[in-house]
Image 1 (tube, rainbow, N blue to C red):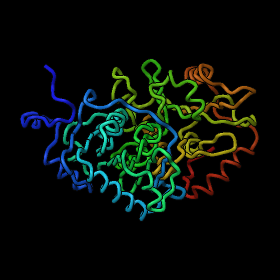
Image 2: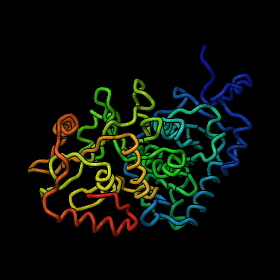
Image 3: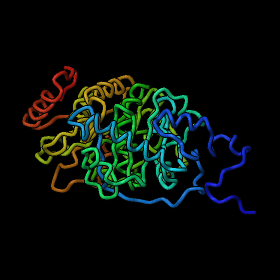
Image 4: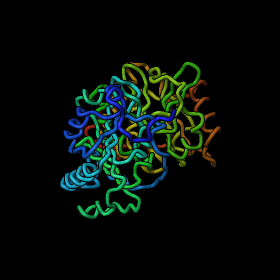
Length: 401
C-alpha cells in the first residue's frame, strides 16, 4: 500500500519519532533564529522524500570577518540581509530543517542547522554535512546557521546596497554571526558553499581544540600523510587522495575530514599524521626537487605558502583565523607528535610533475632518504623574509627558512 504523498502531515505517533516530521519545540527553536513558522517545519527528512539534486558553480561568495583583508560586506548590510531572509522564510508555509556538522570528529566539529524554504536545498546541503545525533544542534553552545531562500527576490542584494553580481543567487557568510545565507540557486554551488562553511566554522573548530588546515589526506599503508599543494596539482591526482576537498582537522584525537567524501567505507577519524609534505613552486632553481625540513622550517614554509613569486599564507586563500596563530599551532603539532616534514618543488625543471608523476615524487620523498633542505643562493630567502616580516611582524624567532 502506498504511503502518503510528500509533505502530508504525519500521524501524531510518527511525529514523536526522532529526526522526522515537525514539532512545536522545533518551531520555538527556529523563532530563536529569527524565523517564524507559518504552517509547518519539516525536520531531517530522508533522501527519498526530497526532490532531485541540482548542480551549479561559480556563484559569488561574500565573506565578512576573515582574519586578513577587507570584508566583502559591512555589518549593517549583514543585519539588513538577515532581516530580509528571515522575513522571507517566515512567509513560506512549509519550512524544511536539517541538522548536521562540519568535521567528522564530534569532539571538535561545528554543529550546523539548515533552515530552508525548499526541500531541494536540503538534499543538496545534506551531502556536504556529516550526520549528527538528534538534539545535538539544540544542545550546542555555538551552532552555525544556514538560511536558504531559493524563492527570495534576486534583487535582495541591491536592496541593501550589496551588488554580488550573481544572476542565479549568491552566498553571504558572516563569521561573527556564525551564519551563511544562500539565495536563489546558491545552495547547489557545492564548492562555494564549502568555502563559506569553512570560513565560518574555523573559529569554532579552533576553540574546541582542533586545528583546521587547508590540506589533503593521503593514506599509504598504515601511514597518514598531510599534503599541501597548489590546487592545479591536487586536481591532477585527486583520485589518489582520500578527498579532493581542501579541509582537514588535526586534534589530539587524530585527523578528521571537514566534509564527507561520499564513500562510507572509510573511518570518520584517521590517525595523527606520520608526515606532512609541503609543495612549493619555484622555477628559478633556488628550491631543490625534494628535501627534509625541521619542524621550525616546515612552520615557516607553511606560513609562507610560496607559489612562484606569490605567497598564500598557510595554503589558504582566506582563513578566518589569524594565519600566524594557525602556523604556531601547526608547529606545536609537528613537535608534540614528532611528525616528519618534507618540501617538494613542483616547478623544478622544464616540466612540472602532475598526476602520477607528482605522486611518484611525493612517495619517493616520503620513503627514500632525501637530503636536508639546502636552497641555492640567497634571493629567495630574502624574498620570504621581506614578505613574512611585513605581513607577520610578530613571527616567532624559531621559525626559520
